[in-house]
Image (cartoon, rainbow, N blue to C red; front, top):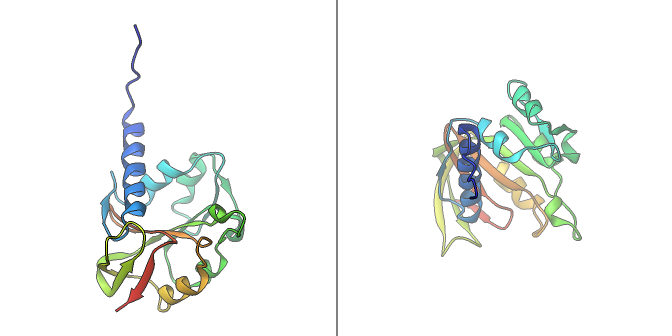
Length: 178
């Protein structure tokens, strides 16, 4: 007889968060729900001992350290938890990968205000035609700098977090500010 392991509550939460993050990246513009508010669910779902992490928010650092992830400088980080983005320095310092290894590009996690702010039109893989969303709480020039820095397949993936809601914007998505 084969025993089926029963996942713990923490494993269930991590699996729910991981599913939400994958769906958010595969369906840009479609807001997903995290099992609990803030970046904690994302930290639990994405980080392990093989990840290099930059964390700009000192309040999140204990959660990051608990995963065993390697704390790294910004240009060498796989995952960047920027908190509430105040300026564009973090975006300028992100690893974009290379022509040979575009998957080395960083994943940026930023707090934003979903449903308020400038209207954006998203297009690209995972979107049938276009999707319009409103995203606030980002510094002036964020979307233009993102456009300038991404040279697909090189670039960075983006998660915008607002409470327990997350919006994914992969590097393959074109963003037009309306």
